[in-house]
Amino acid sequence: MSDLLGIGYSGLKAYSRALSTIGDNIANAQTPGYARRRLDMMEPVSGSDSVFYRGNINPSGVEIRGVSRSVDAWLIEDSRISSGDSERSATKLGWLGKVEGALSDESNGIKTGLTKLFTTADQLTADPANKTLRSQFLQSADDIASGFRTAAGELDKMGDGIEGAAASTVEDFNANLNALEQINIGLRKARPGSTNAASLLDERDRLLDKLSSQAGVSATFENNGSVTLRAAGSGDLLVGGGAVNPITVTAAPDGRLSYSVGGSPLTVTTGSLAGQAEAANHVADQRAGLDVMATSFAAQLNAAHQAGTDANGNPGAPLFTGTSAATLTLSALTPEQVAAANASGSNGNMLALGALRGAGDPEARWSGHLATQAQTTASARAQDAAAGTRADAAAAARDGVSEVDLDKEAAELLRFQQAYQAAARTIQVARETMQTLLSSI
Image (tube, rainbow, N blue to C red; front, side, top):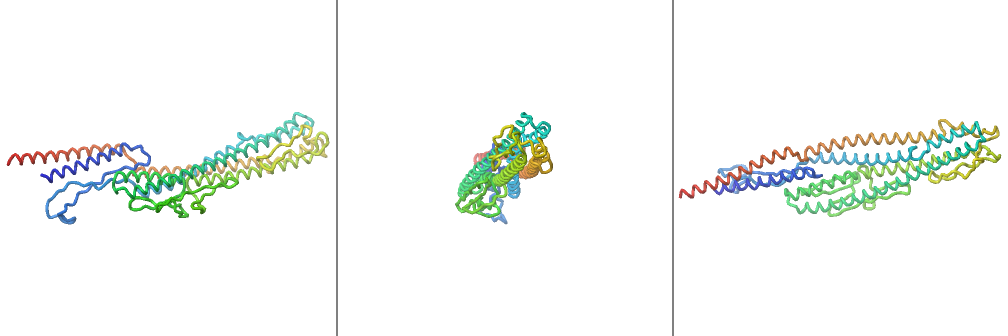
């Protein structure tokens, strides 16, 4: 009867642990990074029996092997790769959208100012002595210069914003590296198959998910679950052998970002850090392009204005001063100093200025610049949509294995509850049988 009692007790112990494991699953159904757990059980091998042959009938109950997690390594890796691509495209798109907004007419009024400038020039051809139109001409030019300064200021702030965001991401990335090393230490000490080991593995995977979304990383695992982490591509060691090598970010004078680890350059091609670097490159290109547009516009308009004479018969003065978009300023001119005339007549210079309108005029070039930016943003938006769809699909496939299904857990709860009750009944039968035997003596 002691065998029957032992069998019943082993069942009670195993099914109690199983019920606790299911309870953990239910309680953590909404916990990020939690992988569904199951209690692994096996029939114990008696000391007097061979694994391959048993000569006697000697039932020995059930034995708990440990807690295992419902995970698929390939699906996890695929999810991390697609998540990194999605984060890169989403981060880049966010900044490109802001660049498009900074260059838009609603933000700076450059396009409207250019249109008003040429429209006023056309009106001055009909009434070159009109002081109000001369004032409007100067005001339109001032609005354009102000628009360039506004756009330059917005792009400068954006460059600073990207640099700050990258520094924050790098700080968080390094904190996650340190946390991962602490998990490694815990995993080396944890008993395999224990609840503690399962919790540490969940946290390890959560940190790896976060690190993969920030930058490209490559992980290799030891038998105890501890991880050696390297930078994808370059293979630079980030975590391993008890060491943590943090990364750093540096911004060039034009705002372009570069990363390094251990003093060596680090190329990041995926994750939010890659998106920030690509956005910084784009903003730097836009700042340089804006300066070219501003100086080219100023040079063209200055040359056109200086080709004429003002109301007092003096040669036309430069309309603009400044060497960049940020410094472009309207010269201090009075309405009488607007050079509307030239050798051909009192409105000759305004006619010549109006003739600048065409495929290569400042108005057309600025419109083309905006169209190029819009196309770049639209392309980034399409890439982000595709990357997001793939990431969602990969995450869904991973969750299909690891996610807790409350309906399934409820069924398992009922199944193990019945098994627990049956094990308790086994002990009760053993006691009753033992009592019967004792009573018969």
